[in-house]
Image (cartoon, rainbow, N blue to C red; front, side, top):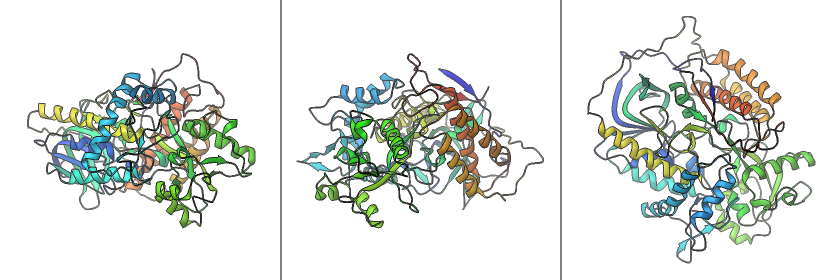
Length: 540
């Protein structure tokens, strides 16, 4: 493993005086209310008190936006070994094969458990219907509401957690920083509009804050995906791994003036073709698996074809699929297309790649434990070893469930072992006297500028010259943004994004090869035998 070091400009984003801020005490603090966080909270022993904080409403998360489905072996013609092999092949040499085996082995039961909670999966002949997606050798993707699987899964999990009387859910609550003392995580400093800043002291903390797609101009992620968890964990001293590994989804609806909408992998799984502006089906030129090649290959193929044709997008052609099946299988996508005067079943749908899933994140073990004592993590904020260098389609909800359960159990057991007594450590947030506290920057312009340079220089194709140029520019912005003290979420998000962008650039420069989603045009081939992780942490 290659170890890098980087120092953030400030340990804490805001000044605080523990004598002037309210204190709240809980046994387990869960930060994030997507599939990983909610499933973790459900695993906490009912004798313990649990607080779940989420920076927006509990219904808004990357998990809820997931369209395609959740992968697991439910077909007798399939087997767990096939699922593991498909995951490992997609992962391009960076998967932890023991982790892969554990997760795919658990997948069928995890899907059945969701059904037992009340998730209404789509059925065929009385059994859960399965479809194929890119990189899968067999139909094994269970889906719900056609193309709104994440929404349905989150519905039942949120209903379940609201019925758990040992949990509290704090919505619209932003986590500014993790609190640490003597090398141990002791909770978090949070903020909301009603109460302002609050110290939440916890025996154990679980981080499940999701992804970082908003670092890039083109993304499928909601506005909340601003890499906050990666940033607060790094400032607290946790190790992060493979931060260069951002997965780009090949097919994002591309219409000028509209927000970017994901067009699920399952559309290609059901038979849709990719064609260029001239109507040419180009995937045979790039990979024998055609439209069902892994996402990194399809994304680069689309980018290459856009350059060849000098056109701003390519198109999805669903005319080979019966219109009734399109309507039944993809109701949400059909409705979005109708808003722009497009018929999903008959018209060519303009698409191009966009940032989709953050593979890199906190280094965790098989139980979700991070390198920082007292801190656990699960889901997209982590580097678990399941995805390697490229996530196999529909393995993300699966990862969130598996490691959410593991982190929940681990944190629960650890909290039960601690005596029922809280000690508030003497924390200090020291700041220079000449600190700029005024919020007179155009934060929207800065965030747009950051996401634009990340898309151009740290996107689907990278090289040393572009990465160094991005590093210089991000450092320039960081010098005057990160030394300011903000009093609003937009400012804190920007500071987090600048830090994580810098970490991503640094690890992308360090990986002088192409592997999975990380493509270096100056090092276009994988280095044989170099199947190493790149980790980054504050110097001790």
